Length: 116
Length: 118
Image (cartoon, rainbow over all chains, first blue to last red):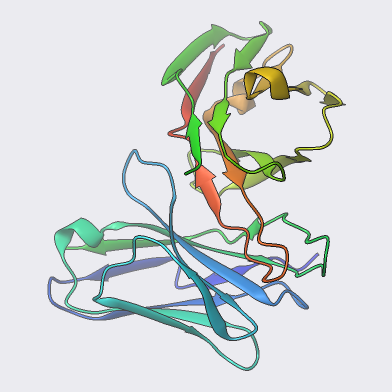
């Protein structure tokens, strides 16, 4: 079965550089979530999109932005990278189930970003 | 505000022993979902189970079982006859779905690192 695809799997950037992470949700999933997991930490919610519109926002720095495109894939753009941005970034997708939403979020394998 | 507490930071057991991972949650909503995820050393998050707040029936899946007790706001996870491949970090998570917007972000606990000793 198709899963959530994230690219790249690994990324090394220098401080102050820019990074773009991509997420391709499971087909027919219209909701995308981004999470950040620092070393030894639990995943923290960053932002989510439903039908190409931002639906919720968590602890996402102003240096980060994200969007969901017409084909439902999403990109997380990170600028002025800092050492503390080094983390595993997960994307998850889920379908919207009308009045009884299916809340089973499927996670991608993550992008490991290292800022040096 | 919702909160998930996994008080056990690390657990080590000898292979074939049973082990229970604790999860306690806080929420003001009557409708919510609870999850368990496994994160092996390779880093991916593997979905194990989702339960909704209206279904307190315990569930068993092979060597895995889950005990949901609404009265104590707990959703504990037991592995019976543990195996080395069970070694991983296990996260309990909570979501409070907004029915009309399909937004079900997850709040994770801090995780329990389980090590199975051969």
